[in-house]
Image 1 (cartoon, rainbow, N blue to C red):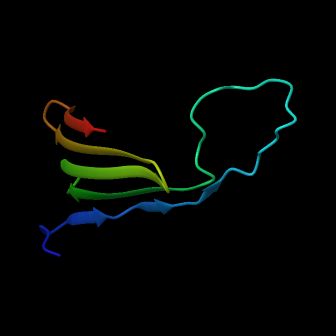
Image 2 (image 1 turned 135 degrees about the vertical axis):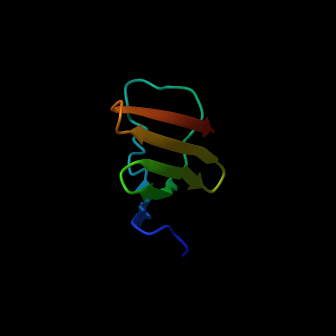
Length: 96
């Protein structure tokens, strides 16, 4: 990968598996609505590029994937820190 000298690249990720084990038809009440999938795979992946503690670029993708449904959310963040005035400016973009 190409990066500026002193830059740090971080690549976090989180895979998982979710299973609905509870199917109790003998409950004393019922909720009518969409039935969730029995098996789902929630996952997230991202990338962070930090330049010498002054600027940073972050991108993240989160989702839950099942047989008949998919949910996704994307986000991106840009940060700049000014040492003279000790302020940090942040720009955030999200879609989902």
